[in-house]
Length: 204
Image 1: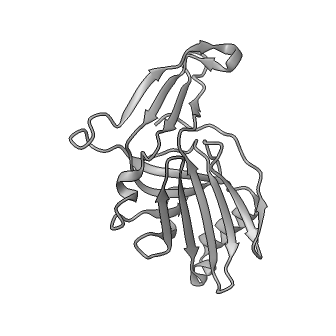
Image 2 (image 1 turned 180 degrees about the horizontal axis):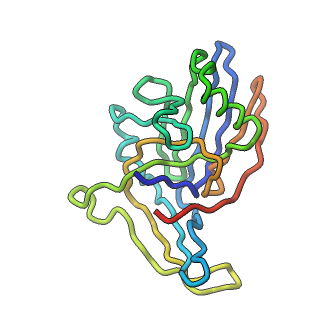
Image 3 (image 1 turned 120 degrees about the vertical axis):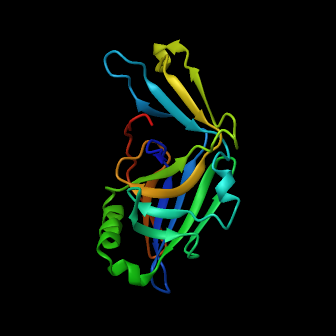
């Protein structure tokens, strides 16, 4: 399974008056991410997700989607199957709202994750996905050459555009790739922005 670690989104953390923690997140469509600068001899590689490219599984409520820590299914935070994750598709972004049960907050990795969110060290929201088989979607992705225009930061990169993908999970990560998939924290109903991080990830 692939993970799009370079696309960023917004993630908020709220304490619920009824106990537990609520997370809200956003993963953007049509935003370019640099996956590789090409090194000394190669070509840069960039990636973007087209609008509603994750729609197939999102539009089917019986398809489970998880919210994880670091793409690790052994460290779940919420899931659609348990009714603790609401996920919606739109033209500009995927949005999520998750509820972390009070009992989970006593689990070590959850406690650590919330501490990382609050400190601003884990600020990324990254999708874990697979491309559909060709028998279902003939061309789920396209590759094109970027024009060469150094003044605009365009260096003939290979641009991968994903038009159809099977979304299995979204993860809180420390090194996001897409600029608008960052993390915010809120306490007592007040949203406190956390700094955004720009980073790169390997080509998948």
